[in-house]
Image (cartoon, rainbow, N blue to C red):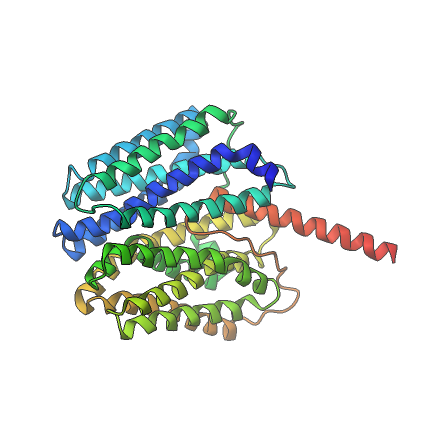
Length: 426
C-alpha cells in the first residue's frame, strides 16, 4: 500500500482536489438554482446535462486521446472545467447552466478516463488492486469534503464558485509535472444493447433503473433538501451520508456477493433500499429520517452497480466482459439523463415526499423484476461461471471497470493456481 501511495501520490492528490470541485458544483448548483428562482423543470434539465456530457465523453474522449495524447487532453479539459465553474455565477440562466453542465460532465469524464489510464500504466498486476481501491476512496473523500466546504460558505455569493475553479486548476499541477507520458491508448467498444439484454435482462434493466437513482442522489438531493426546508449545513451532511454509506457498504456486500446467489442478493439489497427510502417518504420534512434514508439508499444502490456488472459477467466469457461493461455503463447513463427530468415532475406534484417516492419506486421495481427473472430463468450449474465481485462506483468510467475486472480475473487465476499446487502437494 505504501509503495502505491509513493508512486502515484501526485495522481491521488490531484484527483482528490478534482473531486472536491466536482462535488461542490453538483450540490451548489441545486442550492443556487433555488435562490435564483429556477422552476423544478429548469433545475431538472440543468442536472441531467451533466450525465449527457458524461455519456458522450465516454465514447469521444478515447479518440481524442489517440489523436493528440493524454497530456494535451488532460490539460485542455482541466482548463475548460475551471472556466465553466467561474462562469456559473455570471450567467445565471437555465440555458447557460445546462450547457455548462453538459461541458462539465464531458470534461470530468475525460479527466477520469485519462487519470485511470495513467493509474493503470503506473501499476503492476500485484499493486493494481490496491491502486484502484485507493483511487475509489479518494473520489468519495473528495465529494464528502466538498459538502463540508459548502456548509461553511455563502451559496448566494461567488466564493463557492471560485474555490472549485481554483482547486481544479491546482489539481493538474502535481499530475502533469510528475507523471510520465502514456503509451498508446486503446479502448474496447461496448457491446450492443440488444445483445446485452439477451445476455442478462436483469443486469440491463437494473442498470437503467440505477441510472435514475444515481442522478437523484448526485444531482437532485440538494434540490430536495432545499424544498424540505433544510439548512445548507444540513443538506451538506445529508449528501455526505449518501456517499459515506456507499463506500462503507461496498465491501460487505461484495463479500456476500461471492458467497450467495447474486439474484437473491440483488433482490434483497433492492428491497432494503426501497423500504429505506419509504422511511423518510412518510415524514419527508424530518431531517434525521432523511439522513437515515439517504444512507440506506446510498449504501444499497452503489454496491448494486457493481453487483449487476458481476452478475452479467457470470454469463460471459472473459474476453467479452469489457465490452459488456461498456454497454452496461451506457445503459446506466441513459437512465441517469432521464432520472432528473422525471424526478423534477415528481417533486412538483408531491413536494419533498416525491423525492423518496421516486427512489422507493425505482428500487422496489428492481427487486420485483429480479423476482420475475428468477422464475423465468432457472440457472443450471453449467450455464454460468461465477466471477469475483469488483468494487466499482458510478463515478468511474469504463476504463476503471475494465481495470477492476482485470484485477479480479488475475486474482482468480492466482487463487486457482495456488489451489492446484496445494492439491498436488497433498
